[in-house]
Length: 379
Image (cartoon, rainbow, N blue to C red; front, top):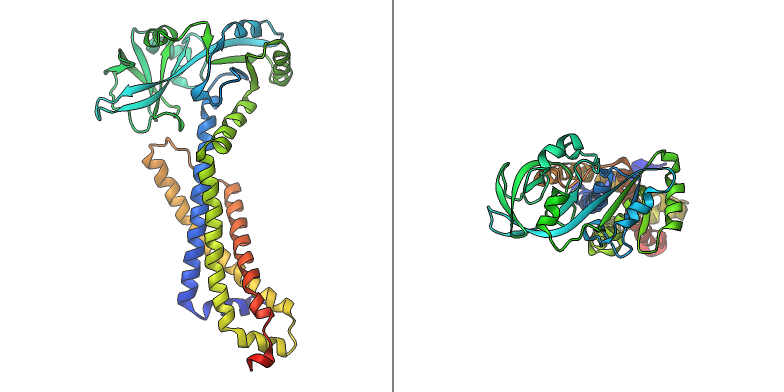
């Protein structure tokens, strides 16, 4: 591969090379940021399921996402408990409500989880029965997610207002609220129904089912689907996570915006590289014509342009990646760790592949002038 000629063409104009590298790096950075936010959406959407102590979930078929779960009869849990292989069933109540921030005096949407603290509903240490029984069984007690963003303006032991009723902050836990709410609260079932009297104990938003053996999850889920009425949806943990991700990435504007951002970044980078390579080809047209006159085929000229494009892709990718890593870290700091944006090897390979494709596509378009160069006309 005759890299020196391609490299000489690129470095002949140092300023133009730096502009080209900056343009590619900018496109790479945009792709990394959009894919990073898209990945954070998926990870945030699934984080609650990762912290729930269940192998199988029961939902209302009308529920599109966990933060807007519709109620269904609690008797479905009792029926599920009679299926062979089921170890334990637990109920989780959810509702969205306005929280009055005492610092800003503004209302923030918070998601409230109500559960029996004597049951291991969550995997979080702060919500395990050994600790939750002490912190949640106090009158008016609530636990607040310390990853709430923006902060809910409280201090431990503060007396606050929730749904126009008095509550006392008795502790914190670490979960993350996702994109549907600013924060998350946890209360026991007694306080849940005191705070939200319109909720009914016989109507739950989420059913949690533990099985005795992990190997039986799929079989038990299939049995539940065949025996329970169609007013309940049965999903394994993996299926519940995939369903939540599909909602946020494919149904809401959030996923569309970030996917569109990747596409626009790709097109911007393609346009920048095309302009650089087209200018380079035009300035070196006599040299390309000379090469053709002394016997070099179009395939050689094509290879030189593709090499230039590949070099630009590599040179622009590295600074784009480094800047993206810095911005990922700044984003985590600015959200107090609430936005789980992180780099992965799969994303690095994907963006590098897109960058290489972007530059080679630009090279394929710009190389036409070199292939059409006629020595007789030029000289």
